[in-house]
Image (cartoon, rainbow, N blue to C red; front, side):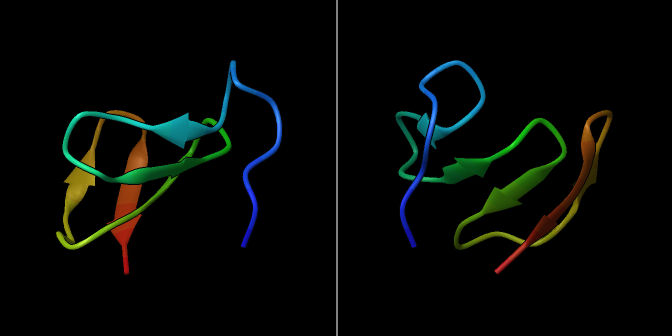
Length: 39
């Protein structure tokens, strides 16, 4: 999987991959004000 666009996709300090404005891919699963977290 490749992230495109540094504004809406990339990695943060926790190593969680940001996929678009409403999705995150990483070790943790949960929910937040942006949507939900999924593996």
